[in-house]
Length: 361
Ligand SMILES: NC(=O)c1ccc[n+]([C@@H]2O[C@H](COP(=O)([O-])OP(=O)(O)OC[C@H]3O[C@@H](n4cnc5c(N)ncnc54)[C@H](OP(=O)(O)O)[C@@H]3O)[C@@H](O)[C@H]2O)c1
Figure 1 (tube, protein in one colour):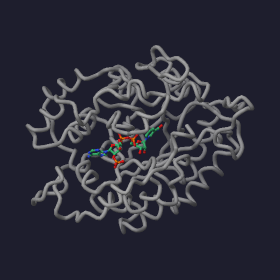
Figure 2 (cartoon, helix red, strand yellow; figure 1 turned 135 degrees about the horizontal axis):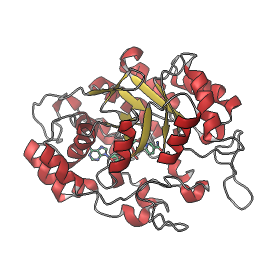
Figure 3 (cartoon, protein in one colour; figure 1 turned 120 degrees about the vertical axis):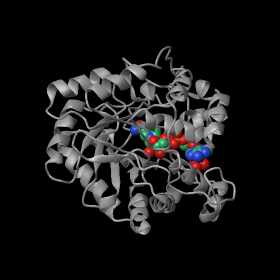
């Protein structure tokens, strides 16, 4: 995932950030329209509320302070970040800059795989809290189920470039995270990129059912059965990469570049047609589909009108339209670093068939 963490801030994005926000509609044209259309929240198994629409912070580190601030000022209240994104300081500054009180924001971060040894977990979270400049996070996620060798190297590799694993397991890490919840530094704990079997193991061997599973879900990878199962366990799903192959990273990485070149979701005629009916964009339809299905979505953008559009994605979609979007399921998984991490991720889930070295699908 080292390449996965390359940061970019394009001139287009910077220029767009200067666009006068007040005059833009959700479609980017000039007119007077209401800004916020929905404030859907979901309730976690801890009793805490989590907003339906949130803000992702992977990539574009230099822009994150301003865009986090902007997203909060425009009405977003869920911010997703991670230790390994190297943006926690910018996110912390963005929160301060926004002027929105900390207790009105749902802030989540993720523990990275080289900090999974139980003796490292508390120190790693303290590092994140220091950089985020906050006494607590609302959610701490284990980023992947795979444990890397403990130490300062985030991607510890042997002489052949192969990832070196640690000698503890995600169960040991989860037990350390459970203890941390009692300190008040972490309000809820959850996982990301786990298989069903790995979550079952946590439930069987530990005392806390994850509050959240953050995983790849979008119309091209709907994971219908897994979503039903997670719901039955009371685990709330947060969709990462909710816009599927819109993130250029997936078109470039060996993980998924073969398949990520399928039609971008924004260009899907069905989504455009549905959008026209509601006076929404294809992107807004994609996000609304996730929300209406009971999940949170965390689109990332550094472009002001796109952020505004994404906030405007919390609207009603008819059952019929939800079912039509259901037909787009291609079981196309774009985020799959199994080969690099030397760990078969998503082993019992959809979208992993045919994996060969250097080619995910
Ligand atoms: N747990 C994990 O392992 C994991 C993995 C991946 C992502 N995540 C989280 O999920 C977040 C979102 O995922 P992601 O960044 O991969 O992809 P995404 O949010 O699905 O898509 C981002 C791309 O869509 C564009 N975009 C955003 N809103 C748009 C709009 N309204 N119209 C047109 N284009 C729009 C962005 O453009 P610009 O960049 O030009 O603004 C960017 O290129 C991440 O930031 C991160 O917080 C977690």
